Length: 372
Image (cartoon, rainbow, N blue to C red; front, top):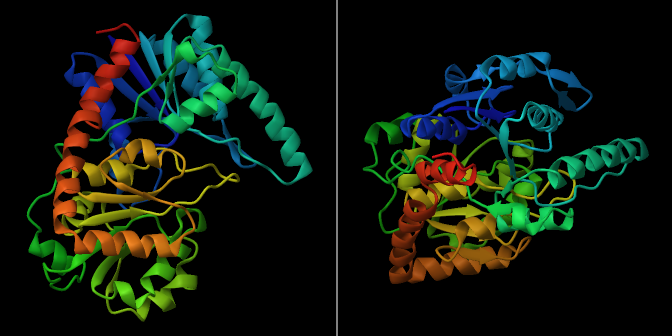
């Protein structure tokens, strides 16, 4: 069977989905406008996709004729559509409906975004009408989390046509290994005592990722025996760097290459995701850091926001958003309870094997489409 995956913005797991479908005897091609770009070396993934030019008007990317001509040429049996609320994705869904191609829209959004400027409100209202039409008339919809499911129900979509399936990762790639000494030297990470708890934060220096509340927690003397590993990138670096530089237990790292992320997860004990509710850009959807951390057998601390609770499940710890004291309290709890830490780490890897294996995700989508 010929399958096309449309990913306007490309993440590595989408490439892995294509490979998993290939392994099952199908032929999968990934189309994309290009990489997300959150890592310096992600352009290497573009060799595995068909790049489609982008028509950029204002802040939106509109569908390029090359996308439709490629679909006509390939005539796939199945189309998997990611980022379903982009104009390109909505146009593609409508186009393939006319052609009679079976389509699976995968919905990540989980909140109605608000806009302040009058002209933007008008434009977005029209966009929302199109989104509602496309989603409500889809034969099936895949929600990326419980929050996405509820969002689709609020939109008026039939509950019988919505299936909640969490996407995965290559869990054979993402698993804890021996820490490579070359990795430590390359990133100038000194020997960190095995007795210390190491907390990794990957969200960047951005407001909606909750960096303010993490920095406030780190300032507490109660966490001086905890090591924090923080790659430095984002719009608020200059705002928070001085405070973090004063803390001897904080190691600020360069924005590292994708393949080195496994080493960074391995070095850590806890991964923290303190994201905030965000009705301007959208809540946290399906955080890859959570999936990858669980696959590496790490304890995940996350706020009760968007898709985070659905991904953590019962194997991590949820905290309220905007609560530095909660961050301090939960880290101290884990640092003082080694048995709990071991138990959660074991359960984390098990959850990844049971739920977040990209091969299982591919199989679930095939079953949903009635193709085997």
